[in-house]
Image (cartoon, rainbow, N blue to C red; front, side, top):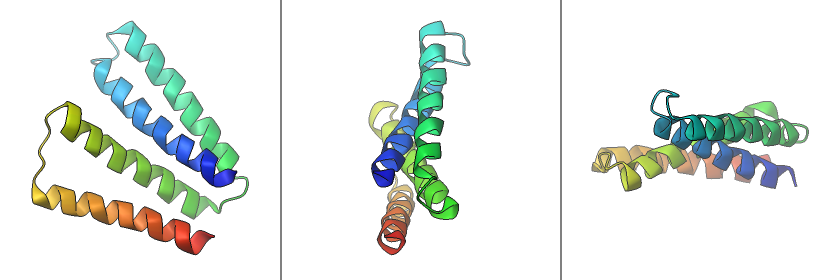
Length: 105
């Protein structure tokens, strides 16, 4: 169950960053509220996951999901660069997350 919590926390991190972008500097109240809610759920599920998963592994995977997910969302919805170098490094982050999951089991 801890790994499920960690994945939920990672997606919460993506939601947090996405809502923060959409809040336009916290000037749009609905997105500001969603930013706070997403951040809360992200940290809550991370804290639940860290009861079982080692802190280094959990934090690295949470950050990796958040970073890779945010970059992918940016490329799809905000027309950010899809340069091959950027895709290469995102794939390295994803590989690292998968590797940590495999050795963390």
